[in-house]
Amino acid sequence: MSQPIIELRDVVRRYAGEPPVEALARIHLRVMPGELVAVTGASGSGKSTLLHIVGTLERPTSGSVRIAGAETSVMSDGDVSGFRAGRLGFVFQQFFLLDGLSVVDNVAMGLLYRGLDGASRRRFAMAAIERVGLTHRARHHPPQLSGGERQRTAIARAILGRPDVVLADEPTGNLDSATGASIVDLLIELNRDGTTVLVITHSAQVAAAARRRIELKDGHIEFDSAEPSYA
Amino acid sequence: MREPSRLRASDLVSLASLGLRMRRLRAGLSALGISIGIAAIVGVLGITQSSQSNLLAEIDRLGTNLLTVENGHAITGEEANLPTTAPAMIGHMPAVEHVAATALLQGSVYRTNAVPSYESGGIGVRATDLALLPTLDGTLIHGTFLNSATSHYPVVVLGFDAARYLGIDRLDQPTRIWIDRRWFAVAGIMDRLPLAPEIDESVMIGWPYAQSALHFNGFPTRIFVRASTSQVVQVVSLLAATANPQSPEQVVVSRPSDALTARLEVQNASTSLIIGLGAVALLVGGVGIANVMFVSVLERRSEIGLRRALGATRRHIAAQFLAEALLLSAIGGSAGVLCGVFATAGYATWQGWSILIPPLSIWAALTAALLIGAVAGLYPAIRAARLSPTEALRST
Image 1: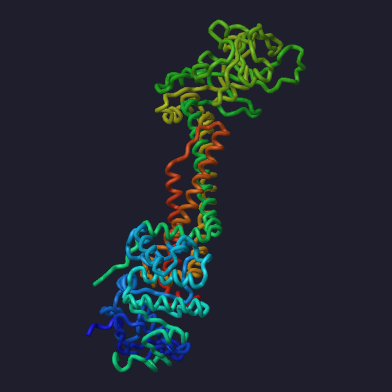
Image 2: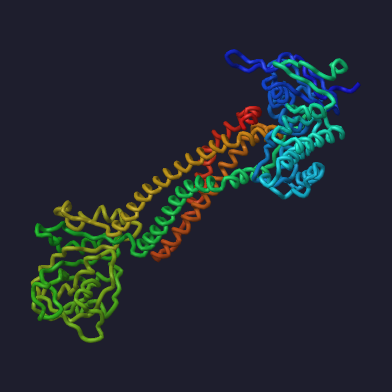
């Protein structure tokens, strides 16, 4: 059996405060390569913290985080940044596109911190744009795009570096349901091509589309549809 | 298995310019502060340098080795007498090249005998020896100077201003003027002597004629000395005792070129003042840049979060904002240098000076602008780098 691509053991994330807030309480999670996992849960259940920890944007207070076989919780800032640049792709609810850049340049930013020259970055970017079906919009700027097109641009940016894992934080949260559905289809298609996708969502539509669903409550995994086969 | 995060230097430059292009007006305004400071510094340095080079050229042309010796002033304000032996004694000093004795005489000068006696015009009558012309390195614009023959007769040479006052601007006709109830033939008109304005305002008559016809007692009142350039200082220190050994303390030795040198120093003093003001403008410009960078970091938190998610290290984020501040100050500095250079070129051309912009001032100004940009950008850049990625992403 192959190694898990994401493996969290005893992960605790506590935020200082009065009283301290435990966003994640002793989380165990294993995700195998090629899975599409939907994480649901009420607001404040720890979904975003889980995504940030898996995405190495945040370190756990205690516990072990292994992504693609590497223990990321002990890496230096330089190493963990390089790891993100090479192994992970992010899709956010707010898209986070730069209005001053065209679609192709926004997408090419996905390879900016990999040391590639601009021409190669643009070439790869055009391929990714084609994959999300936005070739006709490549020279346009984000304010000229619809919400769905913006999210497609962001997805193209996330998949540009052929990441092992794509982490999506409410990717359909700012979209109407028809557009959201097309974004979900795109994520499913990505997953079908072998990319592991972890998507945080409030949407039943997205959760239903995922083969595995995890529900968080108060920092615990309340439900995992893959239990007991993976856990 | 380490795949370091890397950012190319060329990408850093385009990142910095992107940041500024996205906020053009704000970037332009904050660069303006730096521009004004740099333009003031470069312009003032260029204009004073051009003017000083003009002055220096004038000093060079006139020489700094002309000295005048007086015996103080009489109570009435007229020049006091020096001993009759003074010119000869001074002439014996080894480093003295020329000596010319002059004596201011009583007497008023009129264009003709029909001019009322009270309209004397303040022109002095000066008995002079024949060495005056070589000593002052003077030239005549019309006619000739006195010679050993004409100095025995009622013949006069006009100083530049005296000739203008008398309305005499050419000598193609025999010309006479009226001094002390006597006609004098005008032999020549001298060109302007910037180092001896008292000669410009005088009419010169021969020493022997003054003694024989005008009751001149033969005491010189002002002696001009041309010393060897390398030994001017030694000559100055010995002149008083040589000219008047009995009471050297009365003797006043002066160096007319000092007045020009003093003008240089006055310029230097005002230059420092304006450069000081330029430095203040530069400092205010720096504060403006720091302010803009802080606002920029606050506004672009989500961009910072995104970049961290895409693999930027803390250093990359700091470098991006620092490069933006540096680019901003470099643009401001370059614009300021251009303005300063144009101002200098315009002013110098208008004044008829040669244009002289010290290259050091340009480099120093640009370095100062970059340094200010670096200092102003450093703290905002560090703040941006310290922002945790999740905090940055949460902020929208």
